[in-house]
Length: 338
Image 1 (spheres, rainbow, N blue to C red):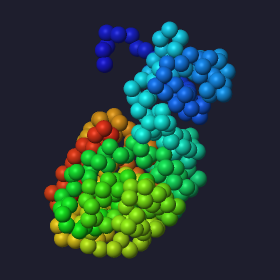
Image 2: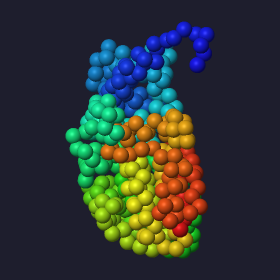
Image 3: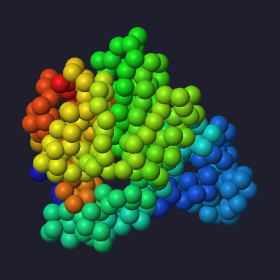
Image 4: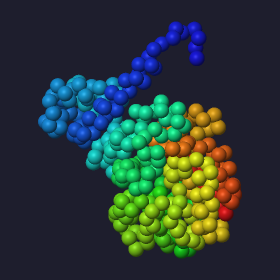
């Protein structure tokens, strides 16, 4: 902090009004504004026709999005930035606008309306004591459908990290498979691998759709139910655990990891995907801030440091845990063997 400068209320007001940024982006997605612009440079009048809106409304929204950095404006014409073209144009294979259905769902957004109560309680203050971990919570279907495009790049990186012999038959278990992207990436890299996806039954329908689209129908099977309760099977070469442990407290995670340990063959590995903060728990900000999401939406979840994850794995019997970044995402893979 520079003590020579006077105090400023800018951060205070920017934070209180950040909901306006969210509302502007949500409106643009609903109007398909980014798709209407596409590769062209369009005026507000032209976009109004494409979006079935008023020229005045489009001009005000597009100007605001330009201020935020989602659009560029020159001589009264709007164009997409590189990032917007990649992730917000529905014609892009990396379109990520569907994530809004999950991130702005009443379940996720509403959990933050009672954040002070969650702080007092030490866990979600939602009507359901289990929060998003309630059995077969419908929000996970939104997650599976909306978040898949953004998971493809890190899934490809993870697939290249696993110590699996592609020339030999193998069995892969994808726990909390969701969209199935991580397991699918591994199965595509290992043509002799059999992939088993575990999740709630409605979510598994999304994973099945994507597995069939990837040409994996004859190598794909499912286990429906709670990962804590169902029989996982055995003799897996690798068990994938993407974005799962952060929903639970350490003792619950250790009990779960012991179950995974028993499902692996000798020499098998576990691959955990998590938001992993540094020991100071405030850096890097993208990973460290995720702990607040867990406070608001789960009973006992957290964003765990590598040291904490390594300790859980050690208690479960694993050894030689290593962490690997999964660019371009902010997630980290933690891989350990028996």
